[in-house]
Figure 1 (tube, rainbow, N blue to C red):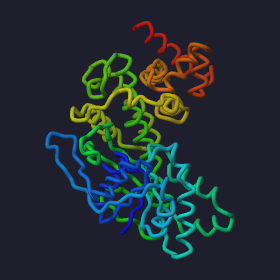
Figure 2 (spheres, rainbow, N blue to C red):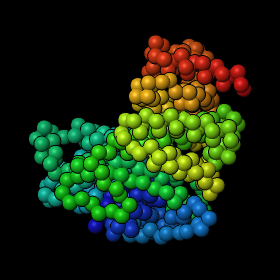
Figure 3 (cartoon, rainbow, N blue to C red):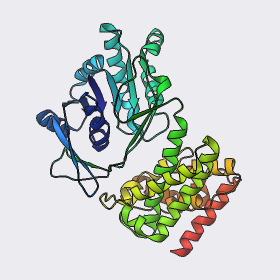
Figure 4 (tube, rainbow, N blue to C red):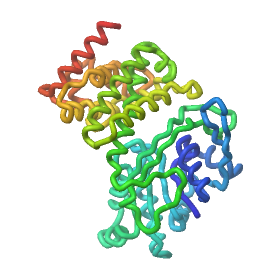
Length: 385
């Protein structure tokens, strides 16, 4: 079986392709990084190391790679033959691969009537749906009708911490032991891919929001609070009692609305929160707060990991959150000069004031109860500096 996977980075190699290999797939990576592509084609295997005391190693084999910038026709041909297509490239890059996928699907229907599923494994809600939208924009009307029943774009939720790393062996990847890959079964076409490690569910949104507003929210807040308190790494931040208390408080708030909204078992969700907090504290994963905090404009967006849970807490629980608003304020104070978005946020605050910045980046209106709360928490953090 052949899987075409877009993205030969750490997530692609250490998580997705790792599971594909152990499920009997040959993985053909698609990337523009010539060094990694060439190494994959030369070695045809690489090591995945667990970030835990045992440092257990797994050898991932049966891999190859195509440079999509240099050899787009090879990518198109591979899609035409594939049994599965996956991505781990980042939400902003998905639209950039739509044309290649559209051409690959065109070539496929010309030679085969075999269905194909394309699964975007990204840190976002509806990644596969977005990719489908961008692919279908490239199609004629009659092609859209033909492709609709032939090709599935099931949404998925993925969760595994893979820190930035520089290894002497440039293909080796260190990953945390925990992982989760949940896929929406109802959007699968043809035979459901048998992949060890995938959990198929009928309704994906509860699992996406649980992950996004627990793992992603907590990770981001550990970074923003860590930066505020002058701590360099996530695990060091979580060793700080004040920071860990702020992060846990935020996740208890997000957990309260998640339990009410989706009917998760309250005790199970509390255990889930504690598991996530322990993952952030893993001493074998040294992740810089400035990496996890990067792109604050995106993370301050109305539907992202900071503002959305605060809004949902207000609407579903009926109270104003405290910890989540303090986390948003900490993100607005994030002034790392090596991050273009952080610089832009600080420029906006300097030139237009904090209220305008909140409105611009969070889309919250001044009349929102959350708006005033963020201003108050922002001022408290400044006063405590």
